[in-house]
Length: 394
Image (cartoon, one colour):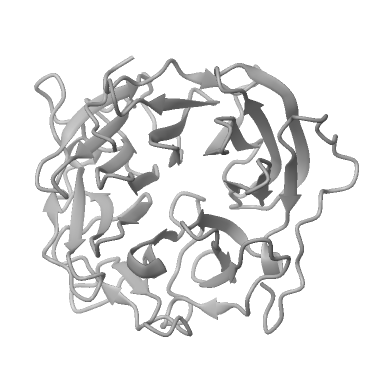
């Protein structure tokens, strides 16, 4: 494996959803991490969840026409059993796209617990009729989202997903991959718009990808990506390459100077002369960074050690059938790791959710399971609870 040189690094109008284990699922034995399953509020899809430093759960989800719908935000306090009243994130109705499962909205929690959301627009807009890269943030009172803004000034050519990250000092990063020259995915680059004032303003976007082995990595056109800021402010961007159109490797970009310079590292290789329409994920396990991705229809996760800069050996999800997609990963206070993913999902096809818990040494435990019901264009979200268990939202 490569070495990542990384420093320390809703229901409309009412919410009655409580965290209840789905009937028929196996309960963990004493001492094992309990995994609870929860449906996305309001019959929504593509949940995205973040738990902040105060234990507040922040959740966004998509509702409406997959070709042009809306994203809603809810939150829940520590130990709570109900979500807050949903707030629509996008100020322009129908301006969010969900089709393909790779293009939905992402959220990040930054300074003072402010929630930031970014998404690929559902249709061309503006005088040049390009697909915009939208951003919105929760207002100072926490009661509504400010009007959405297009942070893309020139780096057009959105296809796959975009992402964002925020830290506790007011830095916000919106990232996407695109090829403004329209020469194909081998020429696609990773672009970043950076705010230093908590999302009030954004600088003109800049390309931040770095070459590997003397070559431009490109970016897989219709694959998603993730951004994440670790506890020391290191910015990580995880995406799939398209080098020479056949090297669909997973690439990790890391910046220790708030996006001024990035180092690139190859995390996993995959030879494929096609776009797999995959997504990936970044989270944290204490001071370490957690990665999750798909290779050849199998999902994996690995830890990045901030002390040595090493990426651990990947831990694969169980199963031999090549139909695992869209992984998410979370770690609890005991160092156990939950890897969850969708199974059998594809273009205009739903599937099931599956999961596996790994112990502190990276070995699979007896805590695993599956449940049907992932809708078309669906994704899963996961987080660790204060009691050491995990919750999956799907």
